[in-house]
Length: 262
Image (cartoon, rainbow, N blue to C red; front, side, top):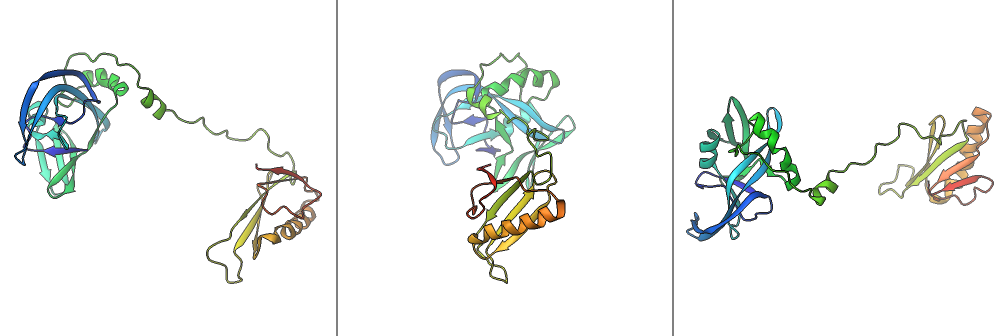
């Protein structure tokens, strides 16, 4: 987590894993608000993503100090004001104003603390920084070109998306009652007024017509299936050919083809 700090003279972080252009430096003492002293051992740039009125933008915090013993990452208001523009503090957060664009930098965390509303980006995402430079979206940005980074395996896996579902299945039934789907649910924590704690559904694959029966016991499924078959076959003049179920309560339904586990 990053905190917005109006007293810090530099952006500071305890980890250098998000940094690019990292350089070690001779240790420099940094005096903290609690009178403690820690040492900065390096500097680098961190690509950040931020939400603005124009959507998500990216910027680069330059010359961020690496201080391994720092307990919290600090965003320097003074450094940001010098590099980009003024920061105003209000009751619900702090806000930046640059080139007529105002956006929230931090949200009130409590006890006078403001949590930075930006997130550091993993190395492969920093490749977009060249475009940021050209469009002047940078936060304290170094105007030199950003070099291509190697692909981060974790980021690549995290950005993968599943294949879209098919709009329709190629194996759908061609006639009513050719395939009937069934499922049993229960026991429910709260019974109906009639004391029923289960229900079973029968859905025709072709028409999507659905019938639901309430049950006192799971053992009633076979009887309700027989009731459904009599009703459906009378209404359609067709025969039930296949029952597709997860194997719940099919005892006593002999004489039908079952697709189990579908």
